[in-house]
Length: 250
Image 1: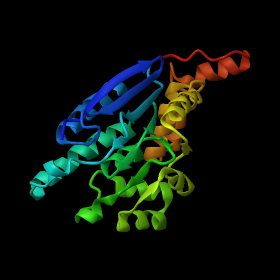
Image 2: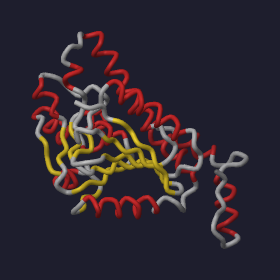
Image 3: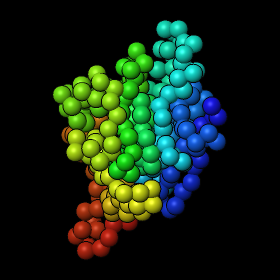
Image 4: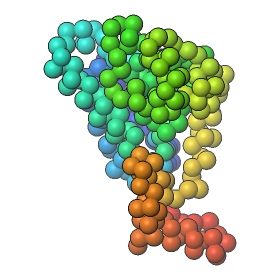
């Protein structure tokens, strides 16, 4: 299977990371996870990025881990590989900007785990999503178990995890697993662009603080930080009083 690469492109404050493979099947090998971690950390250092989109080329978003690579692992190699993926997905979850998984096609196994690390998931309605690891005698190893449970609740998560079944994105939307399902890849591209613009009016530091508070459970500290020098709070309130749009510092 050909190596899955990551293409980076930007359109104003929107950064897009696209998975692509000559075979047309995008998978997460160790090499791809290393590249992903590096790319995500670069995004985190770019204050001009307001929204980061993860998507794929071809008919597949991400088919999951590279099973051929994993088939020769012993327990220690599996632990290292699990840590590699967990670190990359934690880096996505920790990005200060809004993150969107745009599922152009199937998001299975590690592909869905990556999508779960994002703030939002938009998908083509026929794209299949699922965690089929149990059908291989495995379990999800990149924190997808906990992220799925936090998103849809224990009962719904258990069914998907224990059965390994894949479901269409339009059905996943009824579970709250997918935020929006659209008819085609073209519709998805247009919807992602419009969806990203929903967040442009928000203060970037305020969004980062809100994400951190949701992650750490410390609302009070994050709220107080909005009033520090050079924080968004002062400019936002001043703009409100002066009846103008805020000029956010980035």
